[in-house]
Image 1: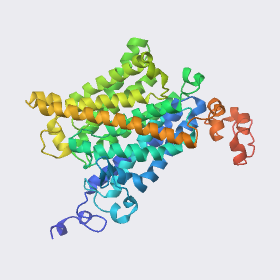
Image 2: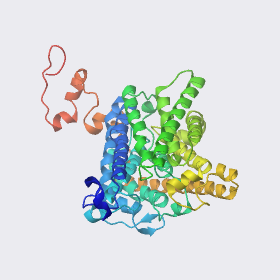
Image 3: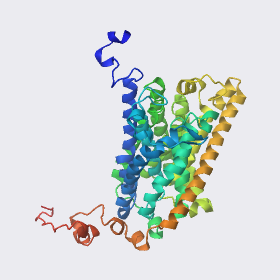
Image 4: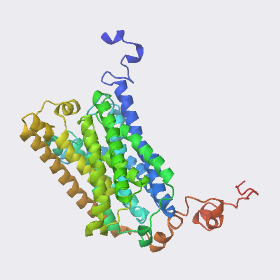
Length: 475
């Protein structure tokens, strides 16, 4: 047999079946882990440091809880709802295959690696979507309500978008929508769902909303840096193969992010005469979000253009439109998730329909269906205007579907939860913060010893008093 002439480490065996490519599997696991690091510790650090000191622990724990809860729900039923056999055109049949050895060690529906790698890879995307939603709700959502929201929203909202757009049997996938790595499924849905949930939960306390100093901007930058570098796996892992397309997607991702950051920074200097660190971080995020639906199907110059636009349009919506439009002002979106994810995600989805290169689309989708996956610009250039126009129309249909579904599903979920528990914290908890909610504080240093002695944690764990040395440090 031919494989007998291969080196031993390449010969098929029980742990290395003929259908598996070790390099592809290694890259898929690496990409998934990079995306996981975006959430834990990336967004845990970013959320915990960008909010006021009194909300640092609550914000970080909302992200950490969501990561853990999504994984349990994902292997239990979420993966099959999002990628299983068709139940209806927008949802799969649920079962417990994602916990079965036979299923997990068989080949995934796409790619040359096992289902276990695919389940893990898709989990980290589901988890970060819920964590992004949390960004709109920081500083006032009842933690018990959040614990209920996460599994419900994953089950009834995220899985619908994932199946419709990413699963080969999904109705939008069949129409030919271009969503390379989650511009629709993750960013548009999290931005819309976060904004909708923020409406139902209500605003933060006026004093928290009016004055919102981050407790540690340097630590915020550390979280932002992990988020940026983790996007290498976010977009680089979606071809499901260590390919030319993966390399292009990674490079385009970082080029767009850099261009967007620089554009946002220049606009801050031009209009406010100060280069804002938080503004630069927002520009970085909008660039990463904008390129996501198109990362591997556009050329380098298109990535630069998308970075320029993602630095301008979300900046304008956040800094000007938000202050002018009555409805936007009524909703307290703590981390401006609507602007950085819904607006930037919508922009990226539209630009994918305009700038998608047909040759690159063929490499990614591996199809010869020329009426699909042609950006409008290339349709005009090649004399296939109708095909390009159709692609843009499909993108708009996808945007409309994700927007409407998330408004409706998120509203229903919030209304159901508030029948069981309040969506908001009590006024005492809103006023005091972490200590009232968790019995802990983020910065319990020696100068805060008296405050710590009176915390709930002191009584829960029966902490003894620490002797303090003359230098002021605990012994």
